[in-house]
Amino acid sequence: MTQQKIISSYLRQAKRNCPFFIQKKLIIDLKNHLFDYFDDNPGSTLEDIINHLGPPEKFADEYLLLMDEPIRRKFIQKDRWIKWSCLTGVAAIVLIAAVTAFGILYEVSQTKVYYCYECVTENNIKQN
Image 1 (cartoon, helix red, strand yellow):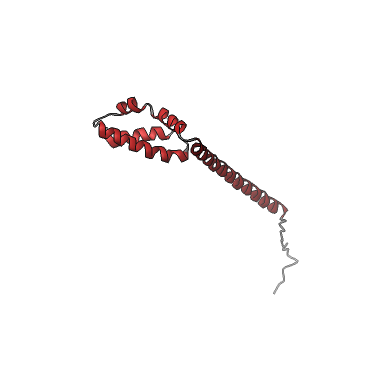
Image 2: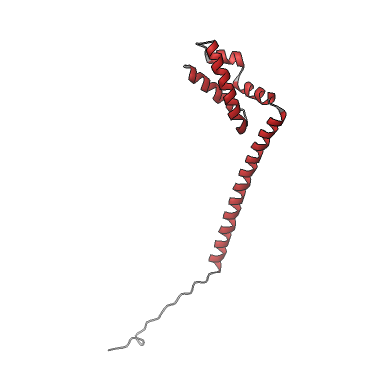
């Protein structure tokens, strides 16, 4: 496994356990740390990195816990705000679609269709 593949594999696994907005900062810091590790220890494997840094999931959890409290709160609040905004937007779209559908169904049910027909009999036909 090449050095780049090992780094991307470890980063991908660590990224899964982080909130969205912290992932970018985690990846930048972790990538720099991994490149430094490979500079000091060329030919290392993924197992060597896991032995040195620990499992990627645990590294991500510890990274989150070691962040400054105000910064961590800011990232978590931003993440919550995005989730609630998306949920509210989807709920609004569903509500608008439901109201529109009911309005269309009401209009269709109130529209009366008039049929006009003409009865043609032999008495009505004019002879030339």
